[in-house]
Length: 463
Figure 1 (cartoon, rainbow, N blue to C red):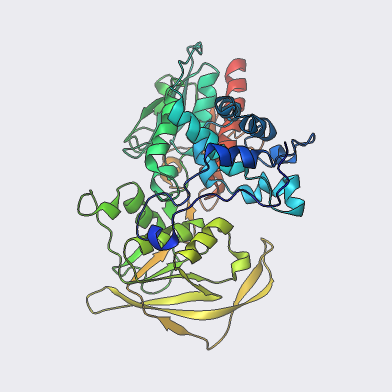
Figure 2 (spheres, helix red, strand yellow; figure 1 turned 90 degrees about the vertical axis):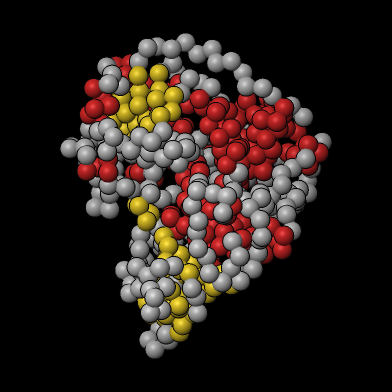
């Protein structure tokens, strides 16, 4: 029986005043009953607009119908036909801008909670079903994947299903890439990430850690080891800064370093962890994306009394997910909008003591279509802070580019590829995800990995 409610079934969450002091997951997930009730809101449209909004083409109406029927194992397996990481995607994908944006139910009410249902199916499966034996017949051909983030895992998993002997080379000591170092525990539990990675390893994929490609091995040396094709999914780990006075003071972090210390190295467990992170009582986070929200919410949990988001446009232009904005506000994050930092002040000992900003106003649209922020002359003001986190973007690390003659890249370091195939300028080498686009979303990176897997398979069959 169809559920014609205009609203999604509310997902249980930790109380904001409790969760802003811990790193436990904010959203607690649906029960069986909640999942079935929400799944019954799906109209199972014949033209399936939601599927066209999914970068990995999950058969959304099919898996939701199975959830509605209580066939949770089958629902999970339906998702896994095209998505290697459903528990992760159900938590961090921007569904509101993709599949749910095109949901027919969203025309007169809220769209179906596709992400919440994907998360439920994946969580239920992991809790109730043992891993199944991989019966894929190997074809004896080797492919290397650089990076174990979303694009690398997606490409590796799809190639393994096709019979290839795949090895992932990961620079860090733990696989997962941005899923491990970039997204906080309260949004994406790290044990769950490792469980998802295990499902890829169960397909026969091997992962070698502490392998900084461009230093330990070059791409040419990997080919000499017998790998017939390479996929580069090394992400965008090089932080951007503003170039303003005071950015080298103690107490100024890139969001990349700040979140890596917290997420991958668990600084929030100090002194029972490998690395500390110093957070003062007043923190400013510069930026308006998901990374800025993650950094601000993490700083609040580490004991900061006041955490400010400083962003040069209005909330309407913020690239962060609406859910992240909503959660940040609930947790007491303070928004300083239409403001841009001009300098950071320091103490005689070299520590941050304040940040000067100037007010902005929106002018004509820029090249991205967003209204360009314009300085309001004489409107400078100072925020008293002792920690500043810069979260204005990241670009690909130049290690691989510098060690690979003949690999074409953009001025800012992104690897140049043929959009439809992921082919680079170097024969047998493909790339995708943030290494190509700069920092983007998990699901777009996965889509690039899947596309490259198809092209690599065609290339090797014809080789």
